[in-house]
Image (cartoon, rainbow, N blue to C red):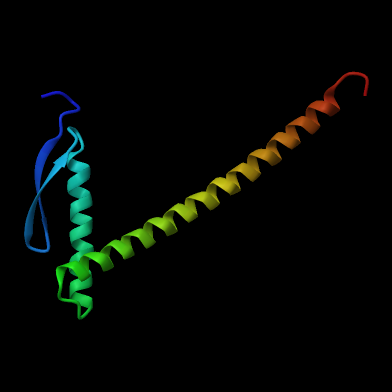
Length: 104
């Protein structure tokens, strides 16, 4: 089996089995994702009055997308902060180098 050949995996979500294709070598990552999704589904099912699997799935998707958006926003803020620090360091280095030039 080549590295790019997808593999079929069984995952369990809300007490139902699903067969899904998975790229070779990504089985553990898919299982972690399925476990996280199932945890979120069960959390919503137990914390709300929702009973239809479709409603629970939509709420889980919204919650997970919200969490991902918050994470991405936080990462973007960290990148902006690092870019500002790099710019400050570059400016400082340029100033020091200019002061070190002969003839000043």
